[in-house]
Length: 292
Image (cartoon, rainbow, N blue to C red; front, side):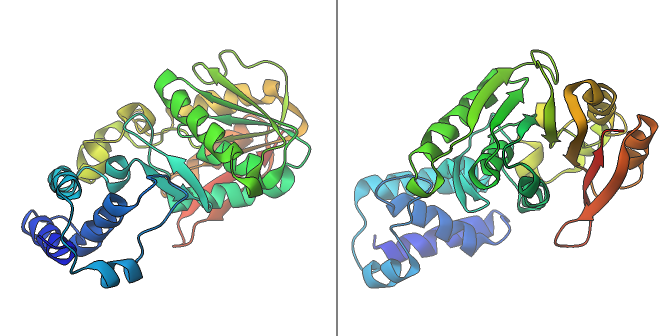
C-alpha cells in the first residue's frame, strides 16, 4: 500500500462511517502518523511532502498505526486525543482525555486579558490543559501565575505543557508558575490582580445532545455546569472579591446564551465596569468586571 492509497482508504472509511469532513480528518491523521518527532510544535510532513512521497510504499508500522487511528476516529474520538496534541494561541499543547480540547473561541479570553497582566499576579482557575494560564504567561509576562484545577490528572497535563513550552526559545517563561490541586478556591492563598477562568458551563440536560466527540470523550467534569449552567459562576463570583486586590479584575468565558445572566450575577456581588466581549462568530463569549 502506498502513502496515497493510505490516504484514499482512510478518507473512504471515515466517509462511510459518517464522520464529518472525512478527507480532512484522514489527512490530519496521516500527517501525524508520518511526522518523525511526534511533538506538537513540529510539522515535518507537509502537503508538499505528501505529494512528493505519495507513491512510496508505506512502512508496515505506519500502516498499522494509521489503521488504528482511523478506527478510533470512526468511533468519533476527537483528532486531538488521537494524535495527543493541538495548538492554541500559536503555542503547542499536549492533550488527553483528562482535559478539554482548547477551542479557538477561548483565544478571545486570552486576547482580552493578557495585555493587562504584565508584572501582575494572575490566577487561572479550572485550568485544564493550562492553555489559558500558560498563554498568558507567554504573552502577558505576569510576575506570578497560579494554575488550579480540581483534577490532579488535568494538572499533570498542564505541568507537562509548562515544561514543554519552557524549552521553546521564543517562549521562555519569566513568570513564577505554580500549580494547585483543589476545588475552585480551595488551597488558594493571597490576592490576585487578575482572576481568569473557563469554568464548566453546559447545562446538565444539554450534555446528551452535544456532538459525540464532546459528549462521549471529553471529561464531563469540565463540561457540566449544573441545571442552568451557572453553578460554577455563582461560586466563583461570590468568592472572588476576597481573593482580588483592590481594582482587581475577574474575567471568564461564558456560553453563548449566558450574556445576561452572568453579568447580572457579577453586578449583584458588587463588580463594576462589567462588560461583554463577543467571539469571532458574534456570540457573547467573555464577561469581565472590576472589583468594586
